[in-house]
Length: 303
Image (tube, rainbow, N blue to C red; front, top):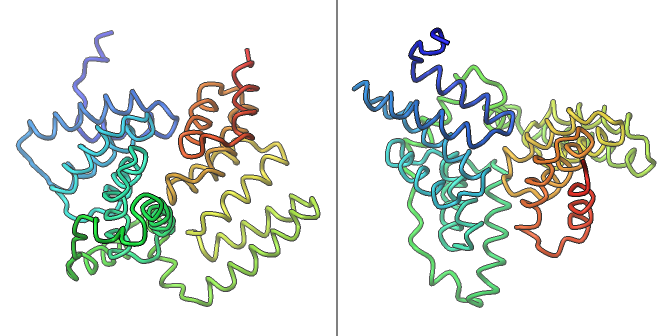
């Protein structure tokens, strides 16, 4: 197939990697990002930002595949290229956490909060690490931490600037929400609570509408996505459920409800492999989660 041999540019390879990542083909995404990195490094246009993003994207693929040590390596390279990239910090924190290197994970989660206080995944991570480290080291756990770097003011300012001029609303939800101010957050919370009340009555369609309205006010609230995913599951809208779980995991990469509900949706969509991966993620975080164990048995029986 001669036309296949047309050499692809690093941007095309990156794009193809993003596509594979979105459809859960993480091994293939790693290969494409690797080729893209190689091409960009060879081309001599050593653009640090672009390379930093590629390493961070490849790290995300490694993380999804459970290859935490490679994820950490790539995040560290990405952070050398672009210091204080919060996605690379979050991904490295998740990998450290999965490897039970809680002190390093705590430091990365804390660093993210210095860059942007509004990132739910970092707050959740700090809370989990604080609990784990207190269990391990007792009340003096802070004394054993590695130093937490101070994020320079210039980094915070350039991040806020980049976010306000970025064209992608999804990427940008954290900062947009700041602009909307406390009023929007209050409105979002009230709408979410109305949604929760409908769920209790079993009125999932009405609940879904309330959650959608809530997310238009505050697109950074993880639990609203996982709650709406629950409604989608009840309404047999499985692809939509998967999408909401993915959004929740983008904000909090170790969210158990998001993994579990995506597994339920994948089971209904007959995506056996993806369902098993999601349940493995749940059981890695909570080995004794009986609901996930039971669903795992059902999924493994699938043809």
